[in-house]
Length: 85
Image (cartoon, rainbow, N blue to C red; front, side, top):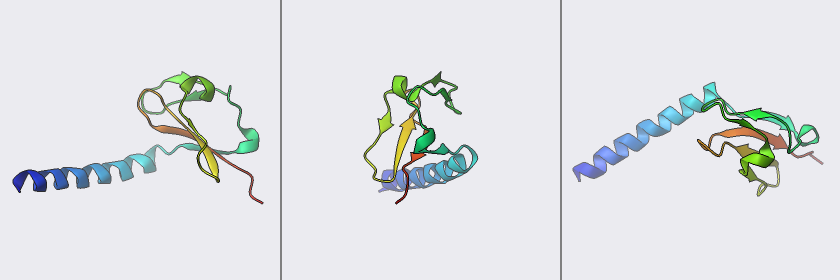
């Protein structure tokens, strides 16, 4: 039981840390019309530079936006909103 309490406590503090982190270093948000798979992007955490195409971490599963994450630290770097109807 003690291990479960420690795990829950750690999970809680990790979630609090994520909220603080995301508010200070949010992903850049642009319109999809301004998106280019060869545009230069840089991760604010690990400073990796590259393009969405070279990152290989482009998520197009959403109906609302496309997102690009850093292949090194997995932080979301860029969000491109699709045009609204």
